[in-house]
Amino acid sequence: MGDGEMGDERMARAAAPRGRNGLQLGLLILNQLLAGVGVATGMTLAAILVTDLTGVEAMGGLSQSSSVLGAAIAAVPLAGLAVRSGRHVALATGYGCSVLGAVLVVAAATTGFVPLVFLGLAAFGVGTAAGLQARFAATEVASPGFEARSMSFVLWATTIGSVAGPLLSSTGDEVGREAGLPPFVGPFVLSAVVFGIAGLIATFALRLPRAGHLESDAGAAGSDARITAWSAFRSAFADRRGRLAILAIVCSHTVMVGVMVMTPVHMTDHGLPIALVGVVLSIHIFGMFGASPVMGWLVDRIGATRVIAMGGGILLVATLLGVVAGDSMTLIPVALGLLGLGWSAGLIGGSTLLTTTVSAATRVPLQGATDAAMNIAAATSAAFSGLVLGIAGFAGVNVVAMLVLVPLLLAGVAVARGARQPVA
Picture 1 (cartoon, rainbow, N blue to C red):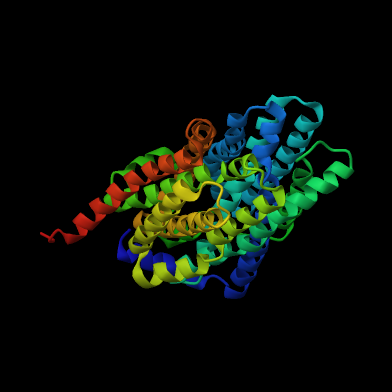
Picture 2: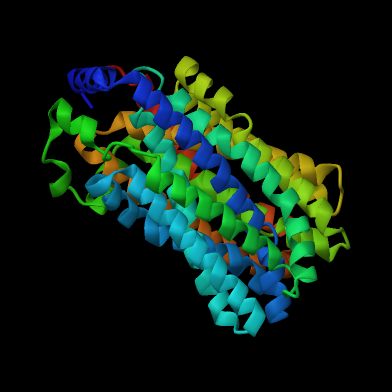
């Protein structure tokens, strides 16, 4: 994007009513808190639920895989809906799908009809796609020059909800059992209620601009309709910086999901209680979102590429610890916390670089395509993680996760070499 175009876009944002934008950002933050509770409460025990229903440990990975695949399928349509009707409509739609998904999971577990649980988890995952869209919505109501920090604050809001979610899952399971529901189903009932509240807020209180609206005001009107999500993706991937941004998002998320989804199964296999699983996952989720304001500040201070490099290094350390952790309740929480921290650096650094590297006309379709690619890769990782856990154990899961970092390393080297080349 040229300096003139970026300047016009920032002037358009500056002209928007700041009080209204501040209110919308506050409501967006509240919704992210609720969405964090909804996702984390249900998904904490999803792998265990699927393993219990099927009796096959390797099927546990398909729980997260189904949810992430649902998010992948929904990413591009939700981006299109955001362009046509506004980000708040896309968010409300995503949260409504999660309510439906939670209901289907409960029905599947109650009837014992296993295929329905995967359909329900896929619908449940659409809420995750909506929550990821919220990070881009934050940049659209941000004051000029504070886009990365606004994005990080919205992600940080997920911390409270996401940390509370795994802790609430044990309580939800107990309440569900007392109500006569099958084991591990109660948390999804709680998730349905929370997502329902988030959907109501998005429907009746949030009024976010149509994605790309400010850019159209800045002189890019009419371009978005001619650019498809996948053509935007291919164009960005052909550029060194665009490729680094995309791989930072995709690889960070794939590594995080692949390791995280098998951690509860690994821990319960070693006889550790569900309450302890919840504590470890809360530490992990705190690492994902708790430091996000710091990551946003670092992007503004030292640049997105350096933060991406830092995130890759942290993910490498996390997976190394995972290799040697075994059933150590000292190393597993540390490894999972670092896994979340590396994800935060990679996602915020990559998302900021993605937003600032491409033209305004390309940005929205590219955001949808990148989130879809991220979730497709993560769904594949989650599906294979169950097989890897059964064959090579938790150490093997982490070794495979290390290999996922190789493309990110190569993309970073290419950008660094390009920066050292003299300008003709």
